[in-house]
Length: 147
Image (cartoon, rainbow, N blue to C red; front, side, top):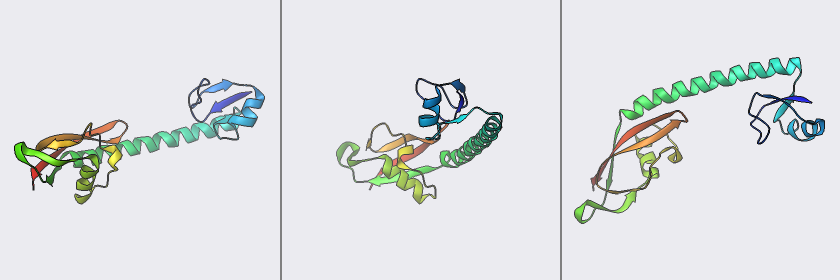
């Protein structure tokens, strides 16, 4: 049976590919789990239309991420912490702290999108990358100052 894959299927193919599989595998596994469609002329047209809609949505999301990235890149966040001798912090500044500072500036960003390799443990200026989209990552200046 010829099918069109709606999702990537390991050892079979990627989204949008037309592949040949056994009838039982298609009817009992792939089609009920909405991982594939039977490759009829009508389903090919439906899939093509859905694919165009998905591409438009991806493009729009990327444009929104780029616009937000320009706003965020212009920001300079200040986070104050208690520090001891030699400007070492008691504790550290984590991605959750950076997300909270961004939220105070009016930009709600999930803390998992802030790509801080390890917590900041000293005073100073650090550029922290923020991933807004799989293809859009912008740096944010974070000033860690003494409280």
